[in-house]
Image 1 (spheres, rainbow, N blue to C red):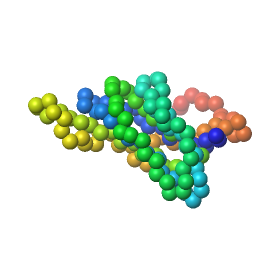
Image 2 (cartoon, rainbow, N blue to C red):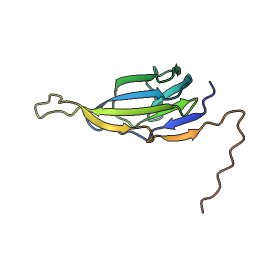
Image 3 (cartoon, rainbow, N blue to C red):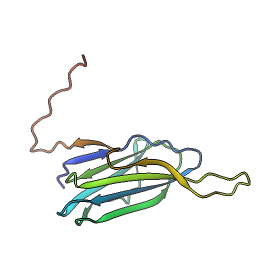
Image 4 (spheres, rainbow, N blue to C red):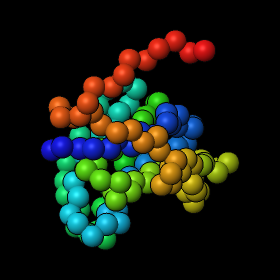
Length: 135
């Protein structure tokens, strides 16, 4: 697949009781788009079931919640168009004094616009200029 854009989350460090993550993508466009979600725990792949797929116009795809352990975690989402819009949230399940889990609440949220977005270098793209010294 010729992905043109890459969305990257910042690192997510689970708190003591941070236990679940939900990843979603939506196609806001009028054409079928393609995407792939890569999830990492430290520098190793995590959540192998987030395979490449296609999205019909206006379709939403959601995965999760997936249980988390110690991190850090980070996510990379490749897309054929900027019409593919990702989001990501984690839920924290704090414990009450008696050891029982209370109602979960939001931990970390990556809304559209919170991801770093990069253009993907493809074989037919012009070469990127070298990175020079910072003045």
